[in-house]
Image (cartoon, rainbow, N blue to C red; front, side, top):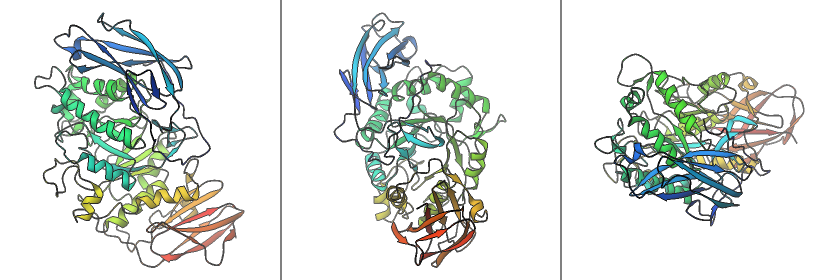
Length: 537
């Protein structure tokens, strides 16, 4: 294990602060100063480079933090005669470092640098008072609005910058992306003889992570080093020395990035039986333990498996997030199931339907409903638009990485994420987070398809989907006023309505405040689906 350093979120009163740093260099290399919650890098040179630099050179840095704690981070080969190590600058003050290596030129070097205050949000953590929610290191609650951008770092994707610029504009703040160039292999990461790594490819990965790190530091990337290369996972436990190098090098190079979290693999079938997509649970456990033991900066770690197969590692000590793939989870049942299985892990529905794959009939309504339902189930959901799991083949096509808004304007994609900005607006303008709130569908009869409820001591949020059928794939929103009946706790409650299609607030007609202690009926003052907010005066 590393030195056992635990990074703690320092809570600040304003939980929904602006999250884009202005005028801050997030990445610093060989400088005397660095930004708080940014990355600092130190490079060292080796006069004579061994024949196999990825395997023959051992290098670690021991960082002493301002509070006296020590973190051990592995160095990595940058190419030529250069090695480097990186620190995630979690504390303001003077940092000291010293190197330990089997190479005399790299061993016994030392120095210091100063970490200065910044407005960067920092790494993503479990919220300290509610570990099933997320928070940045600056204390800001993380409202999860995820997207799938699988080939974002693949070198062959020409529109990656258009994609991330438009994703930021829409309001996405987490992107799932794998390292592999081909969907089912990570061969592009290696030299042809598998005796090293293709640094040109890794440099391109870094370029595509550094661009948003500097421009959109609030956007998280869930990096999937092994993608869907299930044979590579098998080679990992069979003694192949190249296979473990992928995760080891990735952590050494990118774990210090505040916009990074880890997902071991994608879409595998967790089974010890023979099968093309099958991965033995012991294999994922082995990789998870290895990655956790190497992890110096507390970067979150999870795995992803096949649709409708749940999550096999909810109790594994290395696993931080319960990651799910399913279909039609517009009532949040699966999130509720896994919340009951784990009290200290966020539950994320990271795949459901896509805009251009197993697409629902009414994209905008389906995905709006999906987001609200899973948030109010105490979990987090992810959207999928174009087929980002397939290689780019046309500037106007639906495969590979494209800008979301551009694809919608061109008619290649329905506007399924159109209402996502209204979700953030709701919480911003209400001054609310979901921290400490608990799902409570029992308040409305335990029918999540009709009403979704989450409640705290001083606030209750109910989403009324007002669907015209019980079939999620084909359902559309009914153009009638939504109704529900809620059993309220005693006391007075102030009523407000929010239109999730327009982002407009509506005061309750005829009754701005009501008493609790019994069941009451509610009707929205507008047609369509609706969000009901009840608060203590």
